[in-house]
Length: 295
Image (cartoon, rainbow, N blue to C red; front, side, top):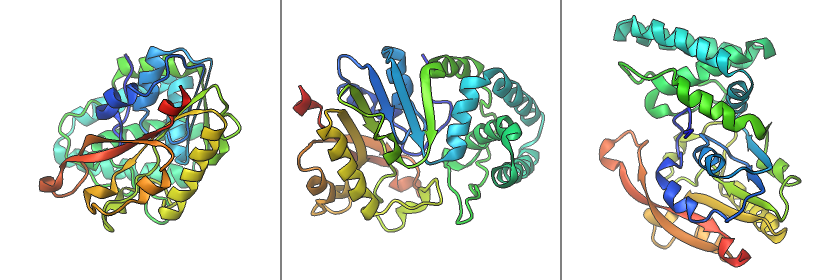
């Protein structure tokens, strides 16, 4: 069974049991406007055979990696195998130097690269994800990847079996780069939609996990809420995830008010990205859905 080929902040592998309970019995069309690491995508594709699937993300480099795995899996495996062999032959200090050289190369390709270099860029995307701090994808104001090395001694850089499983499942998947609103025309009354946007920060300093140059403030959260209401009114079956503001302020009803017409379930999840290990642990997240009202 395929699993995400990268580690992604906010990845839903640990919440799949709860999200699966929201799956409709039959799925003919599926859309994921913020695909991220794809935990729900690969789980759903492994269990269902939707006739039409659309995934989208604003992160161009992420979607490029999905496309390369779909269309050129052998090339990805070949490049990652070479990187893995080289990495294993180096000392940790040499690998640290190698990481920063390849990070610079990746950023050069991100800014100046062309389509002919998309395969190399995708392989570097996976390499950096496996060897950077907590698998975080963070960019600066210029859009340059700036996450430091994680001192990994023996990471699995080329998981050939899983990459081939992912590639097989992605063959029937259409992919787009852009704003989630561009998925609206695809979504109709036959569509199951899973929405996992950038989370609302629980504290003013928690927004360092942003993975694009574009912020996602309360204004954007409200716009997303309007989008979810709109596609729900079209008859789409919708499940959305977000942070629970009540973790830090019991009186913060932001999402309870925004999604007052939807079912809101609080589920326990582990926070793993805090730089202070003592502040990692179980917190509540929100599962927002209209599934109960559809049936």
